[in-house]
Amino acid sequence: MSPADQDLTKAKAAVVKLWQVVDGLTNDPKSSIQDLDAVASGQVLTMFQENLGTYRAQGWTGSGNAIVENPTAELAGTNAQGLTTWTVTACVDRSHTTLVDASGKSAQLPPYRIIHSSTVVQRSGLFKVEQDQATGTC
Image 1 (cartoon, rainbow, N blue to C red):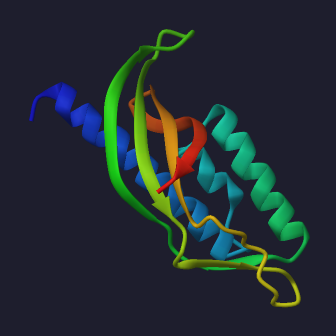
Image 2: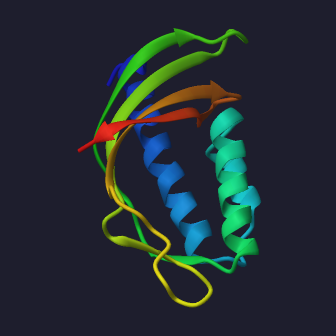
């Protein structure tokens, strides 16, 4: 594979890894939220830190794992800091996950299959998801 193709593969893998880490942190409330630092930055890091903090404060826990289906990636150029970015679009299927409140009641609402458009940035050799937007259902 060319270096450009390798980077596209790494950008897609960054999105898959993000959802794996988020699921792990949701499913194990004792795990360190700092695990997000390896896979996220910017808006995405802040959003998941806040979400997970809320879940933990309210005694919510999860189970299962999201499936990132059919990710596609394209080079998006550079950001304001001059770092290379990619746009990754994928269907994130959360139908095999659960999120329950402290009493065991489901706190997860449909839709369960959502198209995400994510901006991946390369920082110090690491590919991290920096922005994420739900753009529809899949």
